[in-house]
Image (cartoon, rainbow, N blue to C red):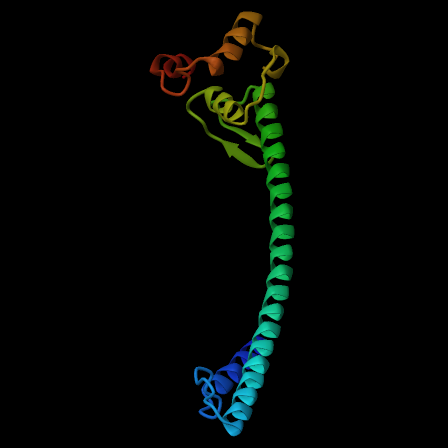
Length: 168
């Protein structure tokens, strides 16, 4: 498709550079000049029709390419959504199991965090996940669970050093 468009552009350039087809020359009086003006107008019309055909081909090509890009974007958005859902599920699993600063192997990966459950809470907060008491490990009491549920809702969650030090 690209080579056909390039070939048409080259033909148009050759026609435009043809000294016999002076597109800016206006016919003068006289039957021969009038006939020459008609021929020039016909040649101009021919050039314009070729340009129009070239633009239509380019337009069709662009429409097809745009449709392909939009389909690819849609496909990638779905993929990102699935990845984010898997990530959220993974974080909820880690939270429920109580994986924090201890060295644990999860699905073959060694989890080595120094900041307790806060890193999981931060990630779930970024994902806008609503946490319930059932989201936390069973070994935590109700007071601890309710406190941990309220922590991400506080405005100082990411910057409050006291909260960070509390979890470590």
